[in-house]
Length: 114
Length: 111
Image (cartoon, rainbow over all chains, first blue to last red; front, side, top):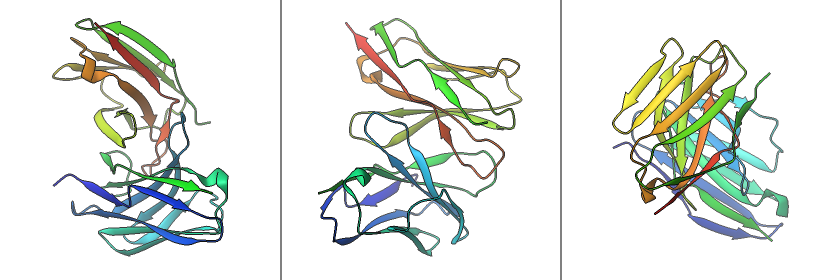
């Protein structure tokens, strides 16, 4: 099983809503990532978890709150988002956070903030 | 600094070879990657190359690395319409698997 799954596929939310994005992998990977991809742009790293601990936060606004409840699951909690936060949110995982190796991506959650 | 550059568009005829080029800046990148993204989809890892290699071949894909010039290329032999997608080059500078992506090259395959 070399699959990273993400739910939901699509999400529409208002600026006052609270929602969560979910990501799951069962490859035994110990590093998990959130990326944000705006239309016609490359993905940009948001957060990295290594062994369930947050190791990188790329100066992401606090309205995005990541959580790694166990080694297979990664959540991204959303609160008070802005329309400019509309994007494709991609989750990825790799065996560990050391340099190199394969990083597998999920299909993404397309988020629209009204 | 961290910067990855790619040409934005490539058009090829079905059956021809495609060559997508990329330049990167960080010589500490141990691995360099090629990802494919189809419309509305996530990223699919196509292949990657270790920095001490010059070439890697995997079926129709050939990756060439010129470490001195920090130039990476992806050659797709016998290009098919199913190869139409955006191709991203990525480096992982300094460790931590933080991927820095180029802007992506849109490959259009026509009959």
